[in-house]
Image 1 (tube, rainbow, N blue to C red):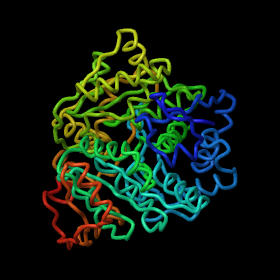
Image 2 (tube, rainbow, N blue to C red):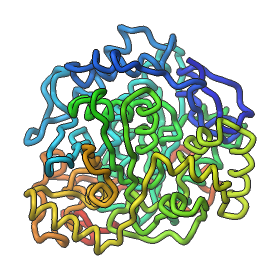
Image 3 (tube, one colour):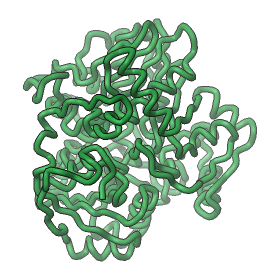
Image 4 (cartoon, one colour):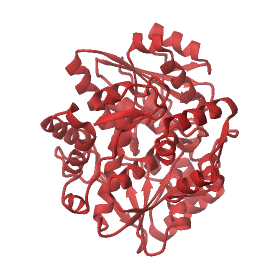
Length: 492
């Protein structure tokens, strides 16, 4: 299996090389040269596998010769061992724990709980695996690397948890100062391992993402620090997220029965994994995107115009994004894998903040995907309605997914809404919506008392670069047990 850049001017790489590179040298994103396909009989043969076994079977098609079968089996088992079933603080030391429970809301709508990993968010599914990939590949090479990432909330803590204490890896994680929840921030800044550096950027998530891309585009700096990526620009992240689409669909009767998926999204990586599952043969009837006020994706699927607007802070901060990086991968496929067209559109978008696709391209793009947007008030109403109907507390992001599913699902086709974070990570918003606060899981109960370490930096690539050259870890702050705005509120 080889991987191509969406912009066509970087060399093709194997899985190991693409994983370690992250972003292609031409600024594009890596995708498989051909989508691995499963027949209906092969998909039926996946029934009855536990999550780690399913991951091994599916990921084998992506890793090719880069990892032998025994090593891949070990990595997948280890990746999901730290997941806990509902109501428990630690998982059993084997691979049979269900890391992604499927819960029915009604006869045709289900919630896939993706928040039982070490940091209580769906990002754990990919980053626990990616962290082990880095450890395996670097150990085999006898090398070290510097990982640079940006987070709107959950990627940061999931990457930190996966990579903390690994001597071969130094991690710098950028988050937008004051634009993540208190719990999200503290899940990052209370990890004091020497190889972890948290940077609070005076800007929004798009600024953080831009800084990361700027440093990756500096060839000399990138080579000198052996930069690697943990954001969903890294193909291995997408590959690992494909697994839970298969896992849920198989439980609902695939391949004999089609399934819809509703995904709260901002950066398009999670929903793109659903698209990949469909290209692999999974009978996905419809992909539904849930957006908050930062609705660049909904506007594109309405109009065929991708236009950046002012970013707004919402109660679903992990989706406060106006530059959806992974959309480039989808556009590459929709344009018939024409890298030149992709490159031209991305150049225009970088210069003008918008691009328009031809009507036939827009039609192809919108055939599979529907989009639905919610205000904060509508998100709160969905949290309250789900609690009233089902006795279930949803975090704001998951509530957007459920609302989008109810608004856009096809009749007669079961729909799975992805629940992407534990409600305790946003407990102030949840309590304000329905009057009931979620119980804090054991992993979070002392988080407000833990010591923090973080560095505030300007929205400036030169300053971030200089800080990384110095290898600074930032000042320490003593947890005070309060947290501004409450433990699930806006951070300072």
